Structure formats: C-alpha cells, structure tokens
Image (cartoon, rainbow, N blue to C red):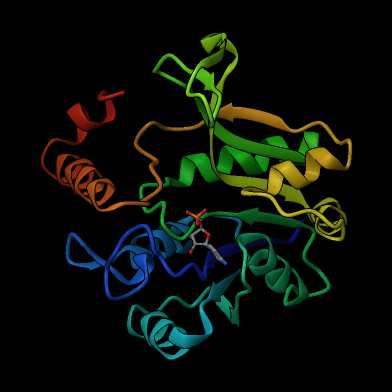
Length: 235
Ligand code: C5P
C-alpha cells in the first residue's frame, strides 16, 4: 500500500482576521502548518505529502517547507475557491502508485501519529475512516428566520467530525468526480453511497478557525510540554 497525505492549506482565513493565512500564523514559536507537517513527517508509513496552498502565498509556503526540511513533501500545488476544489487539485498531483489518501486540515496542528495510524488501519478494511468526537453540548435545530426551535437533537447520536480522514484512493477520486461541494471529504464519499467508518478522535485535535482557537491550541501545547502525563489525561 502506498500512502499519501493531502494537506489543504489554501484558505484565506477571513474568519481569523490576521494579515496572513491561518497556516502561517505563529503558534508556540513556529507557524501552525509547521506543527502539522512535523507530525506527518514523523508518522510511519507515509510515502509523500501533497501540500495545497493559496496561489498568492505559494512562495511563502515553499520557503516554509525548505526551512523546516520537510523531506516528505513531494509537491506544493495551488488550491481552488473551495476546500473541495483544493483537495481535487491535490488528487491530480498524486503519483500513479498511491493507493491510500489521508486528508488532514493544515490548521489542526494537534493531530498525533496515533490518530493517523488508526485511520490508516481502519481504512484498509473499511475503505473510508474519519476521526470524530462525540459532541459535549446540547444541540438544537433553529429556524433561521423566526429563531424558534425546530428540533432538539439526540446528543448521543451526534459526533463532531475532524480530520484525519483516510480513504482508498479510487473511492476518494470517485467522490470528487461528482458535482457536489462539501465542507469535508467524507460527505462526498457518503454521496457515493459508500459507508464511512467513524473512529474516536481527540478533543485536543481542534481546528484553528478564529483567534480564540489559537489560545486554546497554545494552552494544549504548553501543557503537553510542561506536564505530558496530565495533558494526556485532560480529555
Ligand atoms: O475553511 P475551513 O476552516 O473549512 O478550512 C479547512 C482547511 O481547508 C484549512 O486548512 C484551509 O486552509 C483549507 N482550505 C483550502 N482551500 C480552500 C478553503 C479552505 O485548502 N479554498
């Protein structure tokens, strides 16, 4: 099995409000993306990494890869207008031998080698495996016009979907050949009628979307350095 990671980093980060895209924002001494790529560099069984970047910042991203010596990054490709379009561009850059693809958001720097390995093992059996965590809050569907509650969801059935998401290559390509846009790749696979296996992610594996998420990520990273055993028991 030849395994490639696709790291979409081509967002502009409008919700974040920084002068540079989120993957380039500094977190505990290095860019968010450098933390994420470092985990994939050290994870066993990955043959290459395709990094998808915003064309305006192509040079900055290539410089980051060179500066940190990420030798497993085999291609830096330009993304598209949506996350789906960005992943699709990466799929075109996969080498012929790639048989399994791990998609992971560039802005989830607290991913671990264990989460990646678990996804790989499950996808080898189930073809599609995604990390997720059971939700903690109570959730309701609310009418957008009237703001009246439509329905209270059964919390025990609702999971917060994360990445890594691991797929058989052919399946992911088929999913992306459909005329749909989705926030995550597994939604496209579901549209193909193929069941997707969910496995236990990590509450610390947050996606840095807004400025307060950066504070939380920093707290997790500092705790992991200062008190690794306590940090491991936090969730
Ligand atoms: O926008 P969202 O938070 O869903 O972005 C998740 C990941 O997808 C981020 O790493 C972002 O850089 C990436 N992305 C992309 N191309 C886009 C939009 C988002 O690669 N057009």
